[in-house]
Length: 154
Image (tube, rainbow, N blue to C red):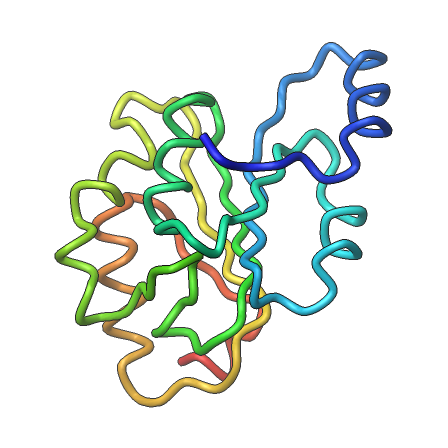
């Protein structure tokens, strides 16, 4: 898998002192502003995935979640709008959701004990399909979907 851990040294020492496993995957798209700041201020006990801009970001997220099946939270930092996510070389939008249906359904195993969630951060104003897009994303992943810009997205 082609991802890098930002702040690897300092985060490793934190994890060595703690027996807690990561419970979240923080995904940072190359289009997100201040990637290094985002990575350094990320959630404690989170895995960080810096998306490779040359690869399909949805597939990169799927691969990361398959390697860490106990993760129940995904935080996505990107640029775009609530219904059109830039993820590596891919665009996740209403028109591409069905293409990615298998990947999205594999994000959280059906046997997960905790309710999964996907948090979208850093998106601009919605164009009109945001509610439909977020609802379909919820249906495919089985996760609650929230945005940091909720007022502008729905």
